[in-house]
Image (cartoon, rainbow, N blue to C red):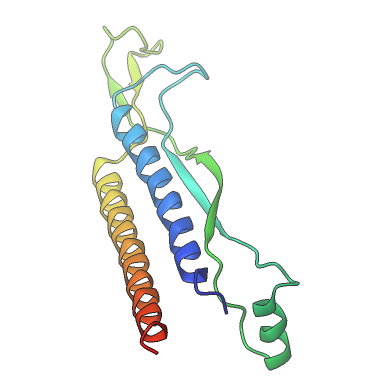
Amino acid sequence: MGMFLGIDAAASGLTAERLRMDVISNNLANINTTRTEEGGAYKRKYVVFKPREADPTSFESVLSRITNRPTPGTGVRAVAIEADQSEGIMVYDPGHPDANADGYVEKSNVNVVAEMVDMITASRAYEANTTVINAAKSMITKALEIGGNR
């Protein structure tokens, strides 16, 4: 197994969680947006992740198939940013420029509490991936020290 596979997998996690934090920040910034270019109130966005596929010809993949063991993780990637199509709450405000004929305005479907929970989760995942990279770096440094003491 390569020495840098764990670092590579954790780095992909860092990139994915950074994107997730950006999307969450955008959701929070648009919580009061009632008119978008697409029409209607802002719809909450979320990131869709997918595991990265291992190269089937790599040494690790071939070894995993021969020994009937699972292929080691290769990381994650973001495949899409999708909009949550659930309806926002309707608020009676007949003086609002975006009010319908009955005087109701559709607010965005962003839930502040849910977004804050997602933000904390993304932050913890980012920290965990940083810890993995630091541990791998430490192990590689120790391995180099062992090899250099001959």
